[in-house]
Each structure stands twice: as C-alpha cells, then as structure tokens.
Image (cartoon, rainbow, N blue to C red):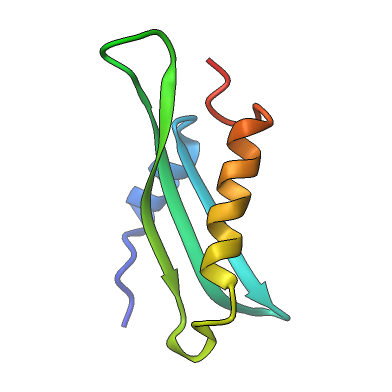
Length: 84
C-alpha cells in the first residue's frame, strides 16, 4: 500500500528547510529520516528538528536508525544544513 502523496513529496523536496536521509542495503530501502529546520523565536538562527525516523522491522537493532540520526547531526554541525 502506498502512503506517500507524490505531489506533497515533490513540494517537500523542493523546500530548503526539509531534509531527508534514506538508508539502503544494496538496492533495498531499509530506513529513512526526515527533519525540518525551524527559525528560533527567542534568538537568532534556527534549529533542526527530527520529524520521522523509521527502519524496516527486519533490519531494526542493527544501528541503522542510530546512523541516520548521526548523519543528521554531522551534517548539521558541519554547517551543511541550518547554516543561519
């Protein structure tokens, strides 16, 4: 069953405040992470918020989710995202 709205996905991917990481084993998608960059209201700058994290049940407890979160943190702290 397809739970993804193609129009919404295209719109999200075009946004600079949306981030998506996908985990593959070979050609198989086994996990994913989405997040949003939101402007802070109490200070200058922005923060990255993890919105969704999922790993196929057959691949859970193998560090895939942790690696996805780790990639998000690395990209954030190296300034690839949320550089404001």
